[in-house]
Length: 329
Image (cartoon, rainbow, N blue to C red):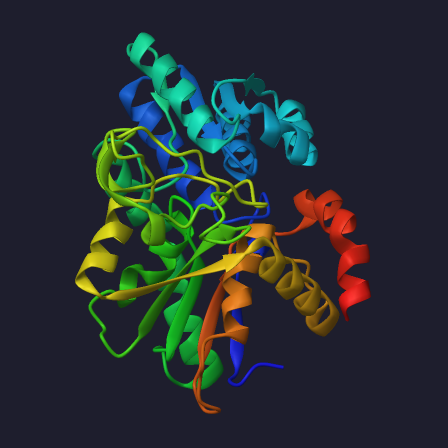
């Protein structure tokens, strides 16, 4: 068990099974106001693609989703959901065929079709105003958190908030209304893949340095001559070589603490939560859960973990590693 009460903030119960719908609802309304008739999006885990396809179906707008070929294969259920919703899913075969590469292709499309196309970016990345706009739309997470905590504990302020970070939109939303409250610890968890020293990692804050990616100056995994280092994580939503500039600022200012969890730690945390609570978390969220075993809390602390998505999409990956987990129990 954990050393303190841990309250899951269940974004997995959102319509479309993750926090991404908070952003796409706002952006489809902006697109309509701008008169755009075609929507494009990038997606890694497929959750943002599903959320974008959903709002496009609702508003009867053409939808094109770019997704790395590797992610298409490992997140097949979400690919089928997007297609059922009427979206065209384009597999991207450049680079290591994951989230960064899908974002590259979406940006190319947007640059070539500026008049009729709106790009619904799924995280707090990209050129201004996207990082700020997406963070504001996701701020509903911490807004809800305040009244839910008040109702459950009598105090709207937890001891700490823990969230996983790839680009960082779910963490941005979870932190947003607590940024100026120094009494609340903010803990962001990156994916360290096979380990930060293995060359197979996505822990940008450990391995990165300032650089420019997709229109933002932020922390970036890069070589000495500025070429992007391909990231790796078992989680399709966290293998991004950069991070939202908001999080780079929180890191530099010391307002948030940045930790990392390996594939193995995330898998173990996911299996543990499933057995303890009957909740199967997304692999992304499992990285945040993994930190609860390592970070020390007091018995009377109240810790909120943002469960940003459901694990349905990751069942094949979980089943593939289930035997290994059982042998080590």
